[in-house]
Amino acid sequence: MMSGCRDKDPQKEQQQVGVPAPAPALPSSRAGTASFAPLVRAAAPAVVNIAVLQASPATDNPLLRDPFFRRYFGPPREQTRLAAGSGVIIDGRRALVLTNNHVIENARAIQVVLTDRRTFAADLVGTDPPTDLAVLRLRATNLPQLALGNSDAVNVGDQVLAIGNPFGLGQTVTSGIVSALGRGQSQDGYESYIQTDAAINPGNSGGALIAMDGTIIGINSAIYGPGANVGIGFAVPSATARFVMEQILAHGTVRRGGIGIAITDTVPGPGGEAPLPGALIAGVTPGGPAARAGVREGDVVVEVSGHATPTAASLRDVIGRTAIGTALNLKVRRGNNSHDISVQVGAPEAAQTNRNRR
Image (tube, rainbow, N blue to C red; front, side):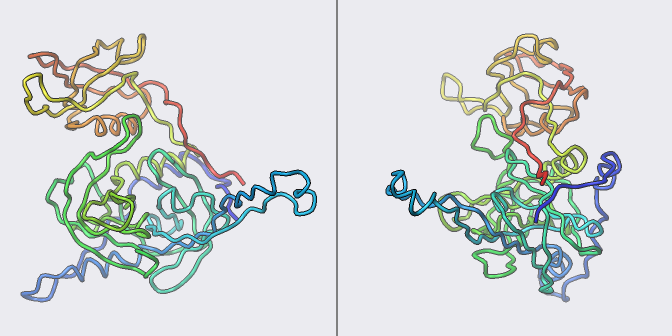
């Protein structure tokens, strides 16, 4: 049922997907009444419910390990299960949907339901496990869409709305603020999440985190803890989502750059002083781009080409979505001195990205 993209001009695809049309102007709220209703009315039609028929491993029956019993009963049969999630239509003309990789992982069939209850089959275009993103193409045209906003301009304290399909109940809207930026638990992954206290529950995955201008600033991805929302949710920034989508459509894979460094968050000083913001260089690959430019182990990167990098995750994210061959200007703290170092982004790191080619 799922198939890859065919008969496409990669360069044309990349140009077309750049930045979809701006979000429509939102009508004002009722006089004297604070309400998100106008924003929701404009955004909700582009947020969809996703139903997935997933393949799951067959139940391990010890008896079937014995050749005698396998002779009569055969090998264990693959099982299937239904899963649900959310997604956002980014390009209505070409019916392109962004969602989470974990929502459609191991999918045998994918159906997408719009708010007006129209249902469409979807083809998997490609996935990017490191960022937990996936791109779908619906078998439809001229659909509502939401524009990807500028997540780099988001500030802690900004108001946001989360729209998705929690617990399979149907489209649900919650509100909150941006609680933190650059969150990530992996030291070597591409996690640089927007943290929010807008309620995000199972089923919200792949839904939209929306700014007050009606644009998407994040794709809801995870909650903190094993169960339902506890006031801490995470979204993949729209800048990352745009980069991943463009790469998948143009190349069928995400070509990430690298400069040959190992990084970690800064640590408290020997006297217990609070750690200063920045990404600590824990290692430099000999002969790599960073080494050739003069970056040293122990340097702390505080800014990249005008963008602050308060955490290792934020630095990794900026480097990972920079085109190969581009020069990055690093502002590093070395002891009590500050240095500006220009580093050229090198060949892509080994990617776990894949594209459906059925």
